[in-house]
Image 1 (cartoon, rainbow over the protein chains, first blue to last red):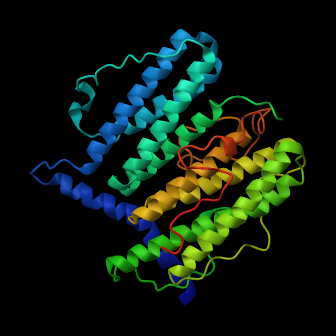
Image 2 (cartoon, rainbow over the protein chains, first blue to last red):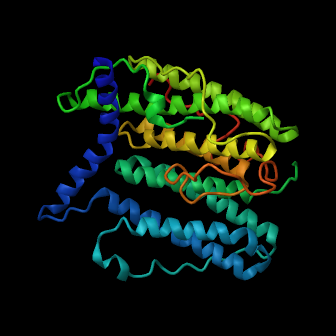
Image 3 (tube, each protein chain N blue to C red):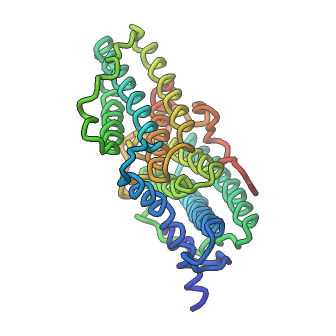
Length: 165
Length: 202
């Protein structure tokens, strides 16, 4: 029985950690001096990067429509990333912010080069998110790590096909 | 494979209890141990499951199953050492695991492999919530490694690996081996052919 209690204690501590840290920030946010939370800056940076990534896909799809079959699912996942990140901003003005310099990336013309271009962008984006993990709250870090893993898998699927199966 | 972290973590962690009365350092250590044990339990399950899946695969896919089976063993050793260094006893592998569905051929074996990697990804996600930055990055790298393997088996990607785990089930036809092997597509130091390396003992 004592052993059971011990296990529960360990598990409870593991589960309580993100909640406790998140809770502290929540209380802090209620204070009168609106000191911006570190998470807000991290989320804004991630939103900027996701927005740019979506612009890249959009530009590639416009230049190489033949890639739509393979790229649309990946683009859809980036749109899901962006929505989830935006949901993290509780600032009511978040929706009416100045558009982040409306990126219009120049993309390669051939399908193979376009795939390589997106692959490189996915790898860089995953790396950038990894660099932001330690500045984030526990639950935001989990979201960023999940998005980074998703982008890493995008890079995998954008790699040169070698039929082996 | 019963890879649920709570079931897997039940076993051994020989630490003191009483969250709420502990100093923050002790609570953080207990949380780290709990997360490491969950990852270890998932790796145990994956090692078992790859043994089952590999028996139903051939060629490139079987080679991948064998490679990932070995990588799971190495990851298991790394995690066990990290648990020990924190004064706890690593969870042991179960004597048997219940598979999420019957595995009787290539497609179900591929689906099992994807399922195993999804669960490993979710287990490493727990480490990312820790305040220890080394463990957080270790967890994030472990997630990428497992997510890359899952995507390779499935031939498809997920929007939120680890956070949103798909229900166990069939994978798309032609999945597993139709894409370049994750081993050839390391993303910035993340090489799925090698086990997650990190602050072992740290």
